[in-house]
Length: 343
Length: 204
Image (cartoon, rainbow over all chains, first blue to last red; front, side, top):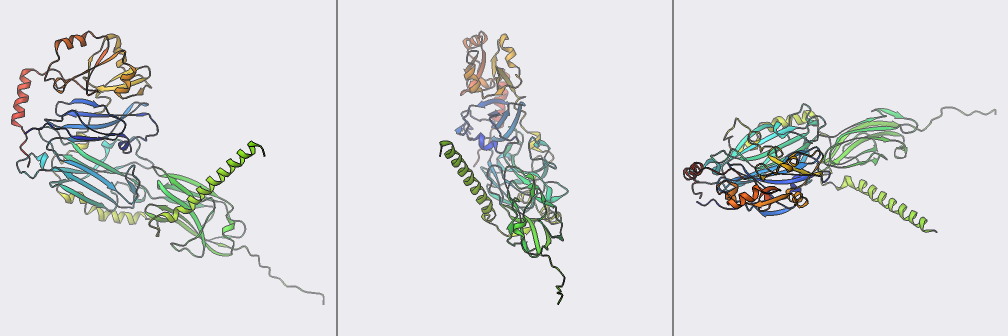
């Protein structure tokens, strides 16, 4: 059998950079694509443009090759492996995609209470019982890794991820896996932040060890929380509206958070008046903490009676009420007295 | 009205428009979401229960039983070695690049200091670095067989490399490539035998 063929390799460093550990803040990163021939470890650095695709001119036969996409940061001098895939004439080709309700395209992401979907596509598996094991099946890995209390994934060591589960596939096709919620470890499930990674690996054979064919991860961010100080549930406002401080933690990277007031007792879905100065739009790649100070909001609580103040956050997953409290406005002064005359 | 006043008005108008559109964006944002149902934010207990249910049934495991070397994590054990450690650096005047180890065929003594990492230097691709330093870096295109050590270089080429006053880098299709030591005939025979005994069965 002639193993001599060239395999197409898509080169898109910028697309892969999005999956990188470092934040691509400037042109401080330089990309290298490395082809490592098995098993002699002959190494070739492919000359590529910043973006595009090309056929690898270095034949991968007879033992296959591993393609590695690296980025190197100038200061401090550090290299990051962005992606790697093993290619051989009889080893199948795999692809992994992860999606969620958040349409953000740079890095798949979702929130600690939300589901996500993994799609694994495997082609090229052999049905021949005499074929090598590496041609007849692939192994599947699921890793989870917490970023820690306030971490956002920068400079994490992915070798420290926990291998949560393993599976296998012995037939070609597209397989969809539904995960109702993340399994990233964390005592407070609302504050989990980290990533889940799904990988497809080849089986070991005489040519190469178990090697990565495809791998993707999804970032999981915590739920937002809010604390309003300056007013407490059950307070009565007799004069000017008090100065409020709204502490917001872990606002979702794509969110609109605001406070509203409406007359009456708390009721989910009520449409209220926006508290001036309380709206915050977050369009970021990581969660954000903010503190808002609200003053002079008398104009939206003119009538006496019971009022509700709510803090809401709007995300790709819907609108969540983070906090609410009721207060009473009592500004009308009643004079109890009598008028008498000398008549 | 003087031109300065016009500018001031234009600037003020632009700022007002920008502020208005930002405010409009803020006002519009809540209604833009496809799911406008409001709910109370999920609590720890709810999510713990959800997780407990989810952990009873991992869809990945249901695709097929764990197989291969299940006691090892291949993403750690077989991870590619570090790029920098697996490369030779060439640096000069604030810039540096990397080539695979064994890609340098000749380094004149006077250029040896340039194989040290220059602190703070900006990393470039080999092609970018070469373009700046053609005066003292030469490349030699090698064949795949030569890179694998299966075919020796012609003697004239070996002499030219040895006598070069420049650093000589082996390249394949313009990309730097490692050149493995020439294989002894015995090794070649072993390779041939290995190829015969381990030839891949035809895949239907």
